[in-house]
Image (cartoon, rainbow, N blue to C red; front, side, top):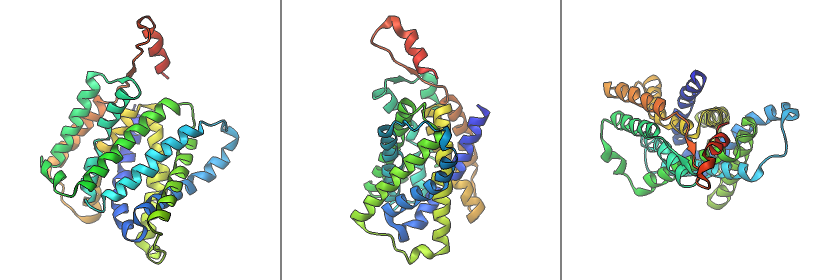
Length: 307
């Protein structure tokens, strides 16, 4: 569990910067250009590694599942987040992104027949309370912008929740490297289609050093390495544990603001961060799969769920 929690913290630090990178890229790349560039940059980093390890890969892959996860976890979710940041600031986007564990649990219960224990629900609620503390209980700010920003961020969080549960259900036996690489390629294809429909990237503005730095940070680290870490947590921990990274991202974004921009960190931020860690711990317990077909086979259902 120490390794999983270390991966969780590292991922939050990487993804905490992603919202800043997207803000910087919007003028030059546009919504779908961001999706295309970050997915392509991440895939470029991972493809040589996949080629190097090609002899270890079972190429009888669940292609349909990989495409589904790529659409929801990369193409659609990241497009919705970029669209959201045209209307709301990056901090608000990261806070709304923290609803992902809630959607992960609800989707797991409704669609995939998973049961969340009282401890898991308690952890989710505690984590969400920590987010409120981080916001200094200024809940009204979430509804001060146009609905499209808030609504699209909530839809993006729902996409993350669905993709997490779908990965656990259909890709548990697939290599993390394979999942990450092919879902990024799928996302890049979705971004390419989006650009054809809405408008191309501005090539002149792409030469700006800040733009190049954002592409490398968002694509190579945020999408490539970050996705590897995410799927590692999802497979070796649980979808609920992987989703709780969104609780840490707002805190991470505030830390980056302090280090890079000199923004002050108030005491309620530290208190909120401690509460969030408590929520992450409580919600990390794996859920059990319901088996309503035959009450006498309940034990077998449990064994089938445990990997």
